[in-house]
Length: 172
Ligand SMILES: [Zn+2]
Image 1 (cartoon, helix red, strand yellow):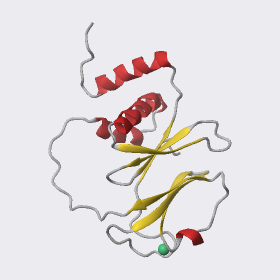
Image 2 (tube, rainbow, N blue to C red):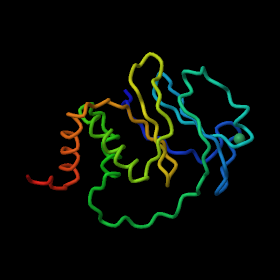
Image 3 (cartoon, rainbow, N blue to C red):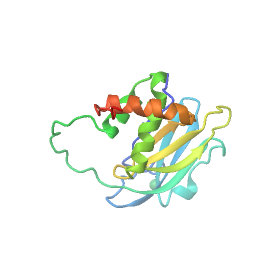
């Protein structure tokens, strides 16, 4: 079973013609809402107009992107938990109890301009508002359902996030 949130990396080749993207090549990406979950598809500029179009409801989001060849991996320094590493960890779990924390972390990263909101959608038949963010550096898409927290709930969730990040809440 798929969790309701997803991180989708950019493919390294065109979905249609299978050509590998060149560094700094402009491409087009889309997210589709399929019964098995969100699918991300990346196309070269030539293939984009020729892509098979799913129903309008299924194509959740489409945007232009630039392919960046991955940098050689540097050895990971020992680092403490950051909002981004915590978000990635939590998005790999299937724990519905974490959805509020995941949403608040995504909002924090958007404020820090690490994530950019691309789209807000309510896929047909789901009733849940979802937000699609793009990671500015890596081009990954983050699909995060919006739990539509009330103001009174936000403070509680923010406290939980601070605890998870090991930041002491102001005492007073
Ligand atoms: Zn192509």
